[in-house]
Structures are given as structure tokens and as C-alpha cells.
Image (cartoon, rainbow, N blue to C red; front, side, top):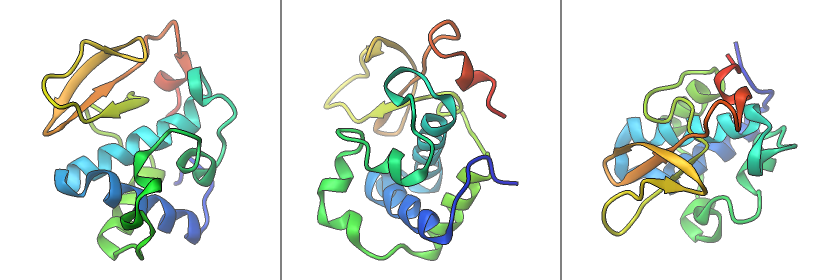
Length: 142
């Protein structure tokens, strides 16, 4: 059962985001991007208050660099659609399980990002999650 409302066009949009943001990280890396996106919709805290839909999350100003690149606008493939469906159905994996942020630094992962502690690195991306005091919802959304 889905943890966020969605239409087929939302799955396609999320699938395009997964590929554009993390294709080089493989299946698991793309699923982690999906985790972060769905967490942002469900958590309703920090910079993500009021996000309720996949399009709002994807197109939130300054949220994802990929939406500014042509690769993002290519048709989604079935592989990424399957990963997008897994994300909207609530499948979450560590280190993105509770993460609201990730990024790809030039070198080592900073210990914090947007004042949130580092969880871990997966391949080239570093994942950051809020504390329970700052964003209780991210820990209670499933």
C-alpha cells in the first residue's frame, strides 16, 4: 500500500529523478534517493513543511540539481519506475531510511549538512537525517 498518494505521472516523475540524481549509484543508490524524497513529503518538518505531493517535492526550489539538466527530462525506463513504486510503497533502506538530505561532495562527507548529522556514505553520496527533536515525524511515518 502506498505511503503517499500518486498517479502514474507521479511515478514517472519520481523515476526520472531517481535516474538523474543517482543512476551511477546503481539500484540501491536510486532507491535511496527515492527514500529521501518520500521522507520529505511525509515528514512535514524543517525545509519540507507543506510538501504533500511528488511534484511539489521534486520541483521544490533548490531541492534537486537534476531538474535543471536535460537528462532529467528524458522518458523514464521501467527499471526506474519499479524503484519509484518501491519508494512510494514505503520501502526504506539504511542509510537513507530517515534521511532528508543527501549530497555528493568532492571529498569526505562533512559531519553535518544543513545542521543535520551525517548518517553514512553510500558510494559517492552522503546521507543526513534530522534528530528526533527536530523532526519527530520522519521517525513515525510508517
